[in-house]
Image 1 (spheres, one colour):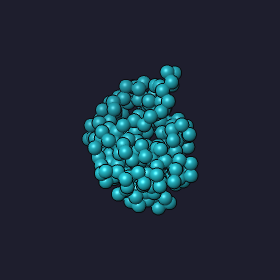
Image 2 (cartoon, one colour):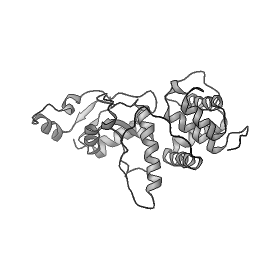
Image 3 (cartoon, helix red, strand yellow):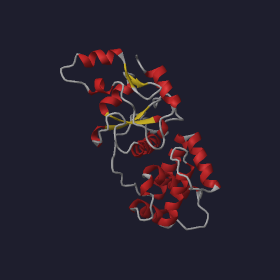
Image 4 (cartoon, one colour):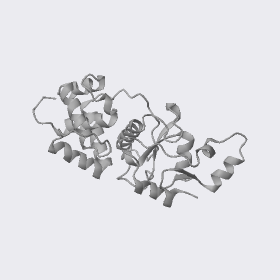
Length: 250
């Protein structure tokens, strides 16, 4: 891609992508992912790192005072992302595919959530799922938000409002939790939820079944435990309220 002074839409999208996929402390010109992407989009690693940091200055959840370099275009893109994460996620991943942008070397790779797989939609669906998975993974530092386990083979990016219910929330990391496979399945089936203080609430059925099991069940131990909230993109209160009201089988 030819280099210009003004950032193109694709360049800005991929800068947002790298911001969402790397911890704040790794947004450096010496980071290998920054270097690799900068080469693809025709920017210097220093410029790309600065652009990614600009998004940190906009992110209301990161509380990074003094980061005021964001341009009007950066702020407009962030506003688009907040208003419709799924639309922007798809645009980001399509730009990455079109420009053959390298995938960041993630420390953890968690399982993709399930979704529709119709032939004419499968590519777009997988792009959105990949974006959601990676955003949730980095948000929760590759650990289950309840147990703290970091075994990647057991981790899943779980939707709070189910995939099938809300198109707008499908790629929103604020609608996601990083959970181990057992907790993910139970949460998805409405066998537990979180109260307004982010504490685990078990359904009667799950509690009864767990108490009668031959071996102690970690779900029993989790009851009353508080969800570990991330530094950025904490779960939306309205999403958790929806889960309590519409999914939980208490």
